[in-house]
Image 1: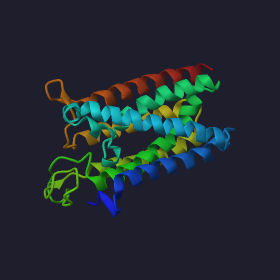
Image 2: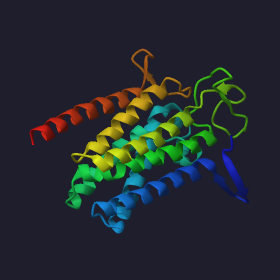
Image 3: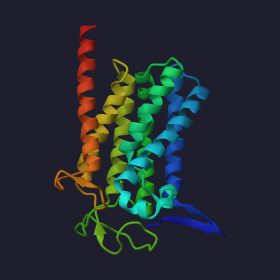
Image 4: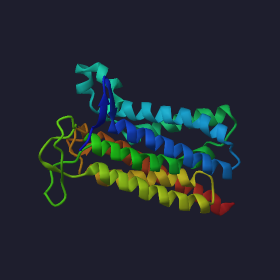
Length: 255
């Protein structure tokens, strides 16, 4: 694909970084709009946005580094080369949750209200950001037949070159946009706080478990090679979200 858009002297505009930045900007604008409807001012949303975006990047990067620790032990400075690709959404969610818990307590807000507010943004951010993954060649799929595969030929691509691969980045992008529109519908009709966020976790986890079956990059296998680290984390998130949603629904029914 096109890992680099253009270069001017020592400056290179990386396609991955551009799409990730665009995804964060879109997420912030959407959340500002949703926040107004819930009585949360734009300035407070912007303040939250800075912390959430920063924690999402840090958490996603830490998870990716841990999954590819052998590479980063040999090249420790590569940890900071985020523009080359390498963010794991599940790691970002975990770090964002901790940040939102801290922020909500500090500002006397409901954690579930804040989590619901940012859930559609997280989905659309992934939808846009994964296009950057596709351009850079990271998060690539395993070899496929020519009818399904895409062939990377750019020498700067992170994906194996000149063989058809499943376009798992586009699978993730499409799922992100679909989840975004579903969450907007749930947001309008939600019956209790936390409903939107829990559905984000369930929908994303379900899609991720499916897409992981087609990934071709090193995922860090466990349980005798039957499951990747990402699949285990995603499965735990899915189970936790389902149990919590059932508990919330029962409480809602009693009330």
